[in-house]
Image 1 (cartoon, rainbow, N blue to C red):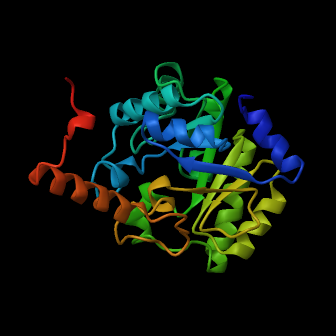
Image 2 (cartoon, rainbow, N blue to C red):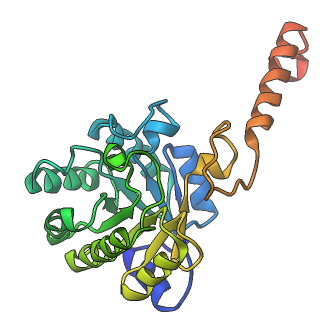
Length: 266
């Protein structure tokens, strides 16, 4: 199975082929997604919401990102692994940004890092890229800026926001990023940005015209409870399957049906 690199991701845009990306937070999930040949695996700081029970991504630490990145890397052979840089790992100084990006690659095993922001983090992106660490940008709705944005709201509806997002996208590309996530951006604007950029755009709630799409794996599989953003398509509803299996296990234990002779040693 051929290993995906950032050159393959760029080639897909150049040839008009769509790019697939899903989040992964553990080895076993990474293995399954990798065997399906998803192009990229994102070890997102969304691990805070999805796996750690946090209300926002802000409390997620470098140690937690390192832990989950290592696990994902162990499970993949084909997909490109991108690790999120958590809050405060790059905002304080460029030196912090370089060091933490380097650690995610050197010790975590990631092949690229992702950080949120546009013009405001252009210097960080450039400095990390200058270390030969590939960077994926992330603009639009940026969860680490949730307090400034006043919630999880679509970005780019107003003309001022629209112009800012275009400027941010161009700054991310100018700084050397190999791709950029567009989150919760109107479809028409996302298409316009995609046309302007040489590098691929990866949409999440940004319409069909992006070069690729990313979703949180728990949302895709129907494992997020009642939480379901507008842009999420559930391709399975595994929560009920899990609950049915566990309920059956409990019942068989209580009624002494399990373990039967079939599942016991003589």
